[in-house]
Length: 455
Ligand code: NAD
Image 1 (spheres, rainbow, N blue to C red):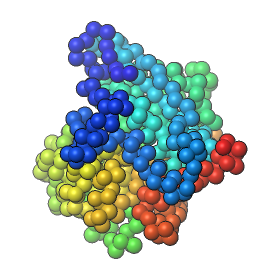
Image 2: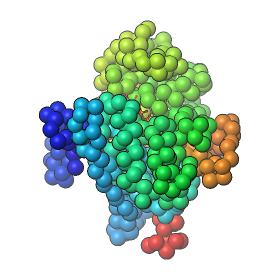
Image 3: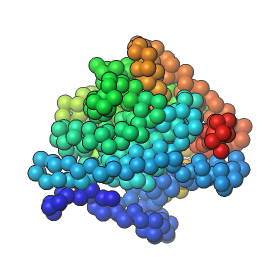
Image 4: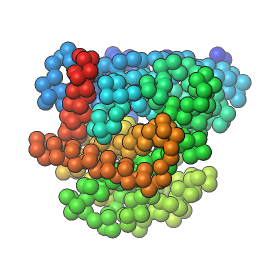
């Protein structure tokens, strides 16, 4: 279901119609295989769903999972699609589609963010939901996996319009949510404010329930440290890996693709360690400065209404050129499929720490492996957000608040444990980290499902 209006010819909620039927996806994939490049409307030669499916199947093969068992762990448990008609400031009704997909709840309540972006479609939400199942298992926190999304162009809408969409979405999916059932959180284009609206709307029906979502503002029982947690977790991962790779922070350069919540916090905390940011991008464009770009000043510039691509003292570059900047660490923190078969060979980094979900396609992964690039995959690297969401949920259930230091210390413990467990497995079985992480995650979910008697 694409977003559409009743009368507008170029509606706000409309996007270029990318054909997403199975035949069209298959056709685009075949064409991309031949040309090695993404087709118009696609970021990569494969969809996010195909990326996650590929890695899942590889791990399932290695674990010897039978086909019938595999189906249980591949297909989502529950999928809900809702219609969200909203009258926008152009006076017209725009009809958006909202999705909540609960992939697997064997290890605990479903958990996953909600994305507001025009490219959201049900397959992308399915991919992100299953990734959450493996991620919570790798991190060893007691949640299942879910994801939500609305295909609205939140970045172009007025605040009150986003509020109406957020409240309407919550109103329509609340029956499948709950603090012991399914707990949403922020993702692309949603933030603490959107979580406050979610909580308020849920509270109208169920009474004050802070544990219904995480990533809330501090004033509304949010957790200290949650906003920066995904970026901080990425830096914890880098710090664990660095000594084994012979890297020291003071001599480390890095590039950030997507200076939003995840990217900007990763940049600020990397900089605290003494690392130097030499390139950065967001949807407005990309900039480069080999002498360093101050991540704190850039974040202030953007918070003050400035545009990244117009940040002074740096050279504006073609966004495609960002990947080719020589650096030690590259952090993709924008959208899925941005490192693909058509651009991976141009990358000049030693390490990739995946902040975004599914930023690297399987074709790119092979190229990077051949080039000797060390990839710390999304399924472990960006778990900091959901780990801190777990802390927020625990605090909400107890109506007790921890200070930021306690939160960050506990986050560090869990991220380090995840890195050690996955890298230990990778070493033992001579596998890349991504494959080892999927093995660990899938094994834990299968074990929980068997013990429960679910399969
Ligand atoms: P965000 O909306 O705060 O930031 C996204 C950033 O990407 C923005 O700066 C945007 O301008 C930029 N961007 C969009 N299109 C781009 C393009 N074509 N090129 C370069 N930059 C582009 O979102 P976020 O919460 O920081 O999420 C970023 C990624 O991290 C997503 O893939 C998300 O799923 C993943 N993630 C987020 C969290 C979290 O806690 N927020 C947790 C785990 C994973």
